[in-house]
Length: 221
Length: 412
Image 1 (tube, rainbow over the protein chains, first blue to last red):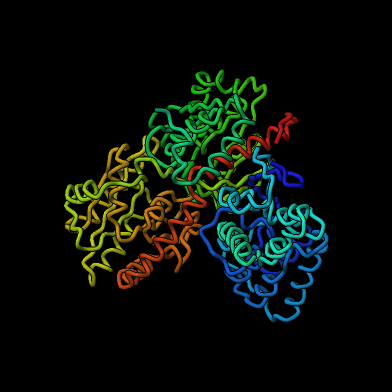
Image 2 (image 1 turned 90 degrees about the horizontal axis):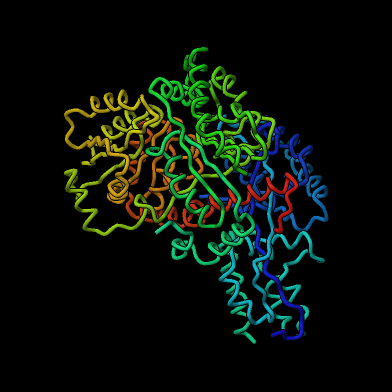
C-alpha cells in the first residue's frame, strides 16, 4: 500500500577498517601533522564511523581523536574540545580538518611540554571501506517505521540515521526526510527524530531511542 | 547436519542473519581456499572449523587445506612464530631452506586447488611460502591472514619472512598495531568466537558439577582459571606466582588447562616447568587436555570466579573473549588484543606483573557485586561485536571489495 508518498527502500551497510599508511602517533604534534595530510576519508572514519567499529568500550566521547586524547595522552582539555565537535555540522571534510587543526594548534600554544605516550598506546590512523546494499525491504507508510526499526541491523541504523547526514539537504536523517512527503500529521515525528542528540548514543542505544521516540510521539498525539 | 548461519538467529537476531545471506548472495559460487598448519589446537583451527562451513552455507565454495610437515619443520615455524612476536631466535639459512622445502612439498599437493581458487587465505607464517611457490597463479586473489602479534618482530625473522608475504594482494591483521610496512592494503579484522560451539554453548548445571568433581575442585572456594596452550608467552609461571601471593590470604584454587597443538613442539618443555612450579600444591590443577576437550574447557570457564589470561604477548586472545561471553571478569596481560577486550574497571583489569594480577584478583574477590556487573557488561559487548557473525560479515565485505577493485561487476 502506498499512503501518498514514495516508498522507503531500506539499505544496509557493512564496514571494514584498513590501515591508512600513515605512521603511528605518539604525541599531539604527531596528531596534528597526520591530520593535516591524511585523506578526507580518514578524517571521516575517525569522526563518524566509530560507532560501527567493534569495541568493548563505552567511551565518554564519540570520536577517536577525543577518546585517544583522554585515554592515552591524558590531556583532558584537548579531549573535551575535540569531543564536542559535531562532524555533521561541517560542509566538507576539509572544513572539519581545518577546524580540528585550529583546536589542536590552540592547545599546543597552551601546553608547556609535549608528552609522548608509551609504545603500545599510540594512535593509528585508519581508513575504512563501506559496502552499501539493498535489503529488499520496503516501507510504504511512516506508521510502519516504529515496528520496522527493531528489525534493522546496526548497519541500517547507521546508514539511514547517521551517514545520511553527509548526503541529505540540511544534514538530517533519511527517515524524517521521507516523512516530509506524507503531510502535516507527521511533523511532530519529524521534529522528534531531528531532536535526538545522536552524538551520545551507541548504535544499540540509538536503535532503542528511535523506537522510543516514535512511540512517545504517538502517545502525545 | 551441516553448520548453518540460521542456527545463530536466536543469539544475534534475524536482521544479522538476513544481512549475511544478502552479502552471501553476491558472492555465490566464489571459490575460497583457507590454508593453515593444523586441524587441532590453537585459535586458528577453531576459527576455520566454523568459518569454512558457514561460508559454504552462504553460497560460497569454501575449502580448508592443511600443510603437513615433520618435527624439524614445526620447530622452525615455531621459532618463526616466536621471532615474529619479538623473541630473539636464531634461524640459519638451512632453517629457512627447510621452511621453503616443506612448503614446496605441500605445494605439489595443493597447487591445483590453489590455482583454481578465487581467493586463497593463508593463515599465519607456516604456509606463507605457498604463494611464492606457485608456478601458475592465474586468477586468485591471495590474502595473508596474520593472527599473531607482530607489532615488534625480531628483525632478522621478519626480514626473512617478508619476501614471502609482500607479494600477496592484501593482508589481514587482528589489531592495527600488528600491521607492518607492506606494499599492499592491510585490513583489520578482529577475531571472534562461536557462541554455539562446544566451548561456548550453555551447559547444564549437572555437567558443570561433574567436571568440578572430576578434577576434585571445591565449588565453595574461589576458582581462578587460565585456559591456554603451555607456551612461554602465556606466562603460566607468572600466573602461579600471582596465585601464590593471593593464596597467602585467600583460599583460592588455580586451574591451568590447555591442550597441545601439533605445530607446537615447545609445549612439553613449558608444561614440565609448570608442573615443577605447581608441585606439592594441592590447590593447583595443571591439566593437559586432549584437543577435543571443548566441553570440559567450557565447564572450567563457567566454574571460574575470575578468568586469567596473563600473556606477555598475545595475538587477540580468544580465551579472553570466551571468558567474557560467560559473564566472567578477566584479569589479562596488558598486551595485544587483550587490551582491546579487557577495559580496566569495566570488563576486568589489565596487569603488567604477577603482583599486579594478585592485587586485582584480591580486589575482585572482595567486591563480588563489581564482578557480576563486569560480567554482564562483558557479555553484551561480546554479543554485539565479537561473535563469529561479525567476523564472517567482514570477510564477505573484504571479498566484495577486492573483487570490485579487480573490476568484477557486482551489484552491491
